[in-house]
Length: 220
Image 1 (tube, rainbow, N blue to C red):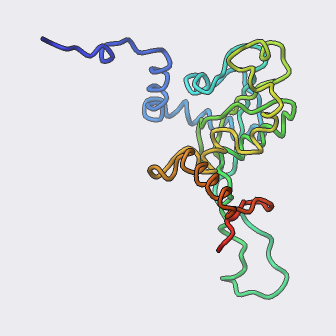
Image 2 (image 1 turned 30 degrees about the vertical axis):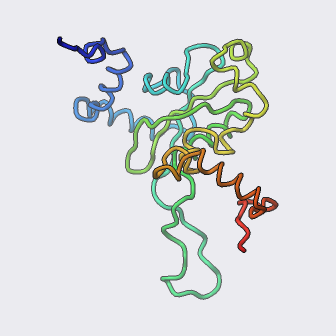
């Protein structure tokens, strides 16, 4: 008896080939990519675009070509941050001016800048589209939670509920959850269930103080 795996011979979707083409773009069309980055560098920080550059990634995040969805491209400066030079005396080594990395990822910064530009919309997600020597570029998908086409769509109507207001500023997008350490785990102790069970146990034993931010554990 011969067993044949059906999945091996299934036809692949259009989005699969779009994703493969994107991975090979730097090798097969470097001139097109370079021209695109030169053009993007001169654009403002947040620019609305007509259609997604990476359709497969946009569709995976929930994008639809319908009213209520818009896509913007955001550029974020690369490298560490600088701080003001202190007034009082310091050794040059202790000036503390150069080399401070931001606490947020560049992708989350891009999402927040997009929401600052369009405060009446909500960020659904974002994806990487390129980088040069100065900037990283991301495309951010924004949704109008008050649009009738969004409210009537059962797949995206959840974003119209009040508890999702300002979700990008509360670390609820994919980039925010990654920054909070909720996407990856190091075995069982990194999972959501283990963390919540630990918190419930601490509350039951009255070892958890939640009056201050950070919910630090009260030492014995």
